[in-house]
Image (cartoon, rainbow, N blue to C red):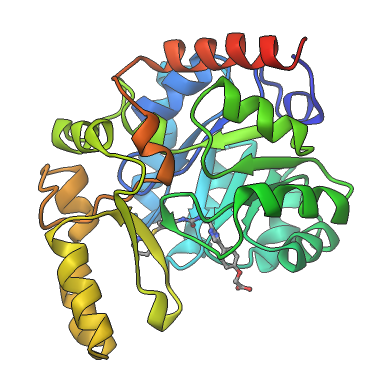
Length: 307
Ligand code: TUI
């Protein structure tokens, strides 16, 4: 299935794996790329040298293209960007900010840049800055989110820019894939379903919590201070939302979330940790390999799109 995104990235299927903090390390990225999609190493808050190691390890596991996601709130983002160029990575996605200042360096090195955006204004700004494509991410997604839904954001971004658009937020099967294409997207990005993949190093408790989740099991914390984060309801979110309602200061709220994603993903504490996941978690019923996830979505998606 050819689209401008498969051509741009040199991949077989228009499926991209999100750059989820702690989850998207080299095993997952290589497995998604080997399955024909685009795997991503999520640099999140990691120091640049750790990202370099991750890139080198991914290269040992796959000879297919893979990328790095740079989380722009990371104070090390600039060093990570330099490592990406030095290691010859050909695709970068960015999240949680504006990557314009890195654009000249990436362009010069021939790195394809795909910013994740949550609004039409940001999508247009990124196109002007030289982005090769954008990921339009709806608020159904897990983690740091904007306020528009995938259903409303994707067609508006498609109308506003000429570069190809990748849809994210609420996609985890062939129906979501086909729906995204009907909205004008030329690929999808998925995070939550890949958190449960057999190859993901995510703690089993985290995978099981996603598999057990129902449709309305997520909450959005941090809305009051402009950093909304979608995660599955648990002791942490209950306490956080209670304090937030009382108008607790940011420092008090931060105590609850400091290291809490690591605690859930790596140690399996899904009660007091942060279990970032999208609203589509309710639809995910089993662990599968990346190969199974990708091929099932492609088969179902192509049938629905009558390709
Ligand atoms: O970045 C994400 N999702 C994330 S990042 C993340 S790491 C984290 N961990 C703990 C606490 C806080 C964050 C977890 N999930 N998605 C991509 C995304 N980018 N969603 C929304 C945006 C975005 C927001 C504002 C993109 C651009 C933007 O522009 C602001 C500006 O600078 O103009």
